[in-house]
Length: 264
Image 1 (cartoon, one colour):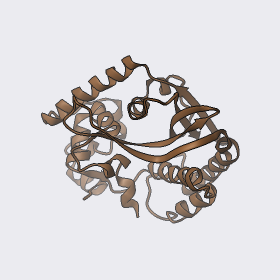
Image 2: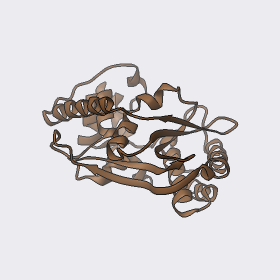
Image 3: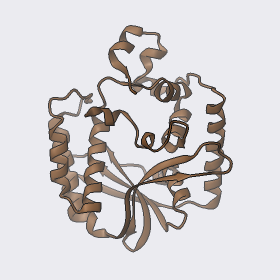
Image 4: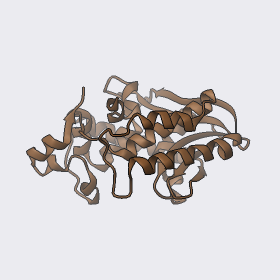
């Protein structure tokens, strides 16, 4: 069951030669991490609990918006199947705490945020863009296209341990990619479900100018050329401390064998 949580959503849309926001973002963080993840197909043996939790919350929101399914019940059933399954919890997390958090956030979304949505066009909609400057298709999945308080909005759902800063939506490459797919959208949004003691749901609204779209396409083109040329190298930084692949970079074969697995 956990195999689906070891892949990014974009992976299901192409034959392996495609580009996506996730792929571009991972290469920019660390080209060697990109190689180990996408080419060597290494994944953590025990998935991060936050990743699995976020995906289940996404599924519950999609079920609510697309089919009017009770999101709390949907989450409860899916998360309940994972009780006792090995997951990598941080020091502040536990199965019980995330269970309560998920149910509280989804109940709040259903009662307070769902009524703000109208003219729902799509939920979890895949897209494929053929961009003349790229040799490979650019793919992605848009969480929601709907009117939010009267404006046609392209939105991405996020779960987080703390509130986002205001600049994060304005600087989000993911929302820029969405705008390329939905150029007629009046606004873009990050809808952040914050796992605080009192559940918070915060909308961060933004848009993109033509200059920003061109800037992003130039970035994507640069990364695509680097990947095609096989330029993979270690980019050390603070992120190494929480990188799943640190044992590989340190040459610790024993720990790498214990903590990583190759997926099909």
